[in-house]
Image 1 (cartoon, chains in turn orange, purple):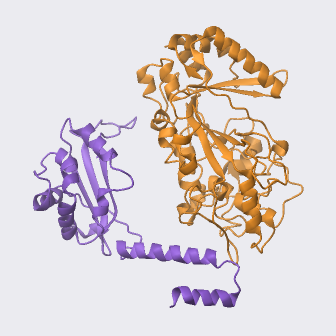
Image 2 (cartoon, rainbow over the protein chains, first blue to last red; image 1 turned 90 degrees about the vertical axis):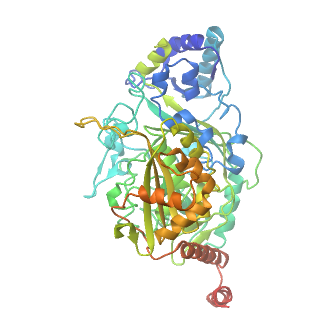
Image 3 (cartoon, rainbow over the protein chains, first blue to last red; image 1 turned 180 degrees about the vertical axis):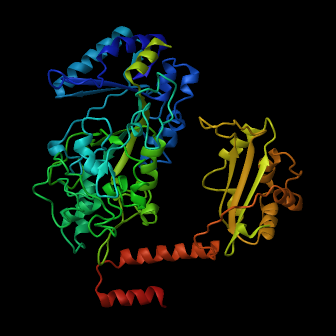
Length: 424
Length: 180
């Protein structure tokens, strides 16, 4: 939404405060809808947040994603100049996220939201994006997605997620990550709270990255089908697994290099428990440049994982658009892809660090300029090496994914929301 | 100058010059305005890595006993290049005349014009020795690094193109490409 009038915008926010979903435990089962708020820098400015507070937000947040798009690799078709309005235009101020059990629940909540805006005035809805889980919790290229998340100290899920989702220890065990890697106001892995705007604005808040990524599913299918013709070590499904580092059902290549594990359950305890350095240092099982190995190298970079664990993020993305029918290899012109969402205490160290150094480049993995194959290459000249004897090359790398737009946002804690609404 | 500035044939140079009070933001704007795609430092082809950094103030850690403050902001220039130092600074004094005026010209004591021997003397006067210089391939000149990278690209392109050939055909192609 765009804020057109600071006073009325704050009234609207104040009226909505009681309905913002917080961290309190549910009693009475899962609510029908959740509602959360996030703000771009310009949104905070538009709502009249005081200047000394504004200066406390991070530089990259204040600059905004569009100005940094080239750094993120959004070039060619993904260039910020071609983004869907309002992304990058300065008009995206407030993001209201409605999570719901079904489409009707979303529609009802959205209707109420619109009614409240009409009545309070001062704001306008400038964009609506629907997203929904696909069958089998897969994303559009066909891979199970979203189940691997960081284990965060102090959370209910930490114990369940720690093996695989935490920091790998020398003795083979794991430990959870410090909360401050994801939430401001708590100690991070460096032992002190991360940079944050002054209290109460920073307390219990976090930075959010929101990106709409269009996926050319037909192109991806054709590319893998054609490449598989030369691939001697397996079939197209195995090649698909090599690109990501997991079989389409989520089984990790490291633990099951030859075929998916029929008993694999993404949400089972320990399903994410594997590491690279001891069992697969040269990438014969999971390629050195596979998507999951790039985005979370675990212990693969040496130094007992010290280079990895400050670059984790909580992902909460969701696919949008209807699936392309299973056997189709020609594009139907429909809009589909992934709304990528992540939360981190530092956009530049976490999201941008991974995007720029680990996904869009291969230097740290000794892969030269190679970039993540799954995300495609806008110049269509890149390649991926599947380690083996002999190695196999997936080349050239077409442009599968186009950035349609995005924003950097701040998710205030409850006290901060009240401060923004109070105009204090 | 100390040999700690050298590693193999490579040299690490650093000069720190105080920025004229009031000129700090103009200097910062100028440096930030240098296009990423065409650095003036490319006019010094012996340069491996070089950069200008503006040092604004000491960072005060909570719990530090004394609070230290700089009397002015400082410009740091570092460059790792193929030695020797003397001729490199001669080249710098000839090639970066326009930029030197905009950059060091905003620092105290810089000669006017910021060029030639006076500029070289100014930079030498403000040199700070390197404590530890690590060069991964200390005997590799820029020319050699670039040639190696080109060769790597050729090798990669060859490997991708010849994927799937029989051993005999691969050998034939290899000879054709690399042993003419």
